[in-house]
Structures are given as C-alpha cells and as structure tokens.
Amino acid sequence: MATTATVEVAAEPKYWHLRTVLVQTIESEFTAGQSLPNERDLAARFGVARATLRQALEQLELEGRLSRRRGAGTVVAGPRVDIALGTQGEGWPGIELGDRQLVDGTTAAVPGRLAAQLGVRPRAMVHRIRRRQLSMRQAVGIECLYVPRAIVPRVPELLGDNRRAALVLRHLRHHPLQGLTRSVEVGVAEPEEARLLERPPGTPVLVVTTSYTAQGRTAALAVATYRADTCRLAFGDVLGDHGDATEGRRGGPGAPPVPAMAMGTRSAS
Image (cartoon, rainbow, N blue to C red; front, side, top):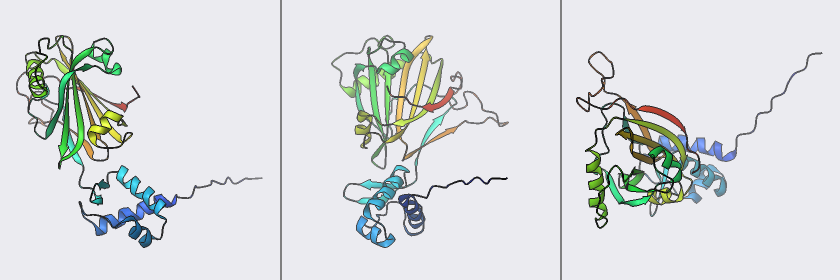
C-alpha cells in the first residue's frame, strides 16, 4: 500500500508578514529621510498590536531599511554607503583623514586574537590608531590600525594623539611594502565598537582585516568594523587595455601584488 508523506509548513509569523507589508508601503509612499508615522498610528492602520509592529520595525532597522534617530523618530534609511576595497596598487594606510575622524593615537595592548598575526606576544604594547568613518555626519565604521613598536620604534611619549598618529603613519611609509592580505568576516559589535559606532552592543557588523607585510614580517594590521545595516563592501580592479587586471595601474610602478582575499565569520576573542 502506497503511503503519502505530509509536509507541515510553519505558519508565517505575524511580524514577518507585517514586515513584508511595511516594505511595500515604504517603497510606494515614502522617500529616504522621511519620518514614518508614530507607532500608535501605524498599529491602527495595519490592525496589529504595537508589540508586533515593534518586531517588524526592529527587523527593518536590522536590514538597514529604517533608522531610528533621536528627536526624529523612525525614518526611511538612505542608500547604503559603499566601502571601496580595491585590490590593485594599494599602499600603506593614508595619513589624510578625508571623511574620517581621529578617535585616538596611542600605545595600547594588542588584542589577544591578533597577537600571533602581528608577530608579538599576547597583550604586548603596540602603536594603535583608531579612526571613525563618517557618512552624513553619522558613524558608519571604525578603523583600528596596530603597528609593532619594533617597526616604528622612536615615538615620543608626550606627543598628542594627532601628532602621534601622523608620525606613525609617516614612518610606515619608510618601509617598502612587500604585499598585503585581506579577510572579510561577519560578526557583531563588541561593547567598545558599539560605543564608537553609536549602536547597541551586538549590532551586526562587517569586519575587514588587512595585514601589511614589510621586512619579511607583518608590519601593520588594520581592523575595520563597518555597520552591516548601513555599509556595502565594494570590490573592484582597474583593468588594462585588454580587459586584464593590471598590477600597479593605480599605484604606479612597483605597486604591491594583488592581496589575497578570504571571507568568514568572526569568532569571539
């Protein structure tokens, strides 16, 4: 006797159905930067409990479709910020801030998970430069550069953060860059990262780690943490006349080799 298997399909959660309806409503009735009605009015419009509405709004905020701003309520988020990650002709981290804001330039203990990669003992003191990347005056990323003191040995202790950061970056350029490797991971913002990003701890983030090689060793390690709800990583090469990726096209003669790329999930430190 033949038997028929029955597959049970779980019912769609109410908040998820509401999330789908809200996406359609936002795309048809609102523009970037425009505020949504208050929760009471939205709950009444869609005939749902406010708890269900909050779940749906939190999901849309997590996806980067909405943003909650102090004094402005819930607003429709703008386009994602493109973070350009070139692969050809890159050099040492730049000295100019551009759209970045210096957080500090100091001497600090290297995180344990990075010590081996940097070639120093756990908790060893290294130069640390932290810069916050801004978009529309909002923090979207934190760049943290670690440099062993053996690479830049003579930095006066009494220098202020700005002068110390500039001096370390300038001295890095005295070393011929032999190459770099880069990895991209997904993770969550730890408390200090969350504070600098002005987001709650546990916020989803994209973590880009770049290792710079000089003198046959890791001379610097940059860890950039970007808000996953706001940023988009953009990869690209400059092509030669025949469509091939040309080494040094952007960086000129002697540009470093193409960096290795890897993707994964950041584990807890």
